[in-house]
Image (cartoon, rainbow, N blue to C red; front, side):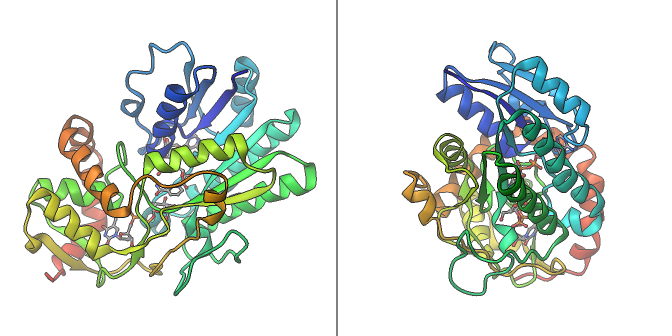
Length: 342
Ligand code: NAD
Ligand code: DAU
């Protein structure tokens, strides 16, 4: 028997990749995308799905309890997969309010709707909840030490999910993913920003010395992991999802430039992000024990991502020429004016 999934935030980067994955791999499943269409939501990410009778789109806010409940009832939803969030660390430093609202209150609203009906609930979370990891790998039982408003909001969501499992017996699971890269990522995030800047011979604003480390994983690998946890994950459990290998940002930048045949002179070292977490690194053994493994190394994922942006200008050019320009000027104008090359 198929499931009827409410995929919140399904018009965003990972959510859209997940929707494509589910509809392609589970013939019996139905998907209701529930999305507020913030600046990061984009119906182009779901292009081609309108013809599929198993797919429906609802334009609404996860903080709107009546809209959530109406949608669950109207479509017979039995499972919630929550991707909806404000997700960009730099924006959370600039304006934390919307992060607390969506990532905490929104999660609470969905949990309440799930509790009333005994729905299966999955929360898509992040390795940023563990905070900066100087050495070694974070395991799922490590303390949560978030350091940015984004990470703190996501941690609030995770804690609520756990509380609903413990207190009300709700069948919940949480995945904590590392940095995703691939198709349809809004070009505020480093991979699409740097790739498209380099394609346009624009500078790449590297924060500080560029030696911060991230585990860049292919979004499709993350989607497969979420799907497995949704079907096989144990109630109340948390699963880390990543390649298990973190690399310095400068290596990522050099891979982008080399893939595009662009010069290193495009690199600019600019003022660092306040409170910038130097390193994330997760232990993915629990996920592997469930039968998952990443299909791409960070290096393969970066090359494959660059290729997608080269082949899909139709997707990112309208975004970068729209309201994004004002954002870029605000975030980077003064930094680039004071920048230096490597
Ligand atoms: P994104 O910013 O690309 O997309 C977020 C989506 O949520 C957008 O479609 C937006 O319109 C929607 N949304 C925002 N507020 C909403 C609200 N109040 N109601 C309904 N919809 C709303 O984000 P992403 O990078 O795809 O991340 C998806 C999820 O995965 C987030 O929960 C994020 O914390 C988590 N995550 C992301 C990464 C990553 O590297 N991008 C890694 C680990 C975990
Ligand atoms: O770790 C998972 C997280 O990865 C997700 O939970 C977040 O939603 C997602 O945005 C991402 O957070 P990061 O802050 O790691 O991603 P971002 O792409 O913003 O930055 C990646 C690294 O690159 C980070 O060390 C900061 C650096 N960077 C980023 C930008 C945008 C730069 O050096 N220059 C930049 O202009």
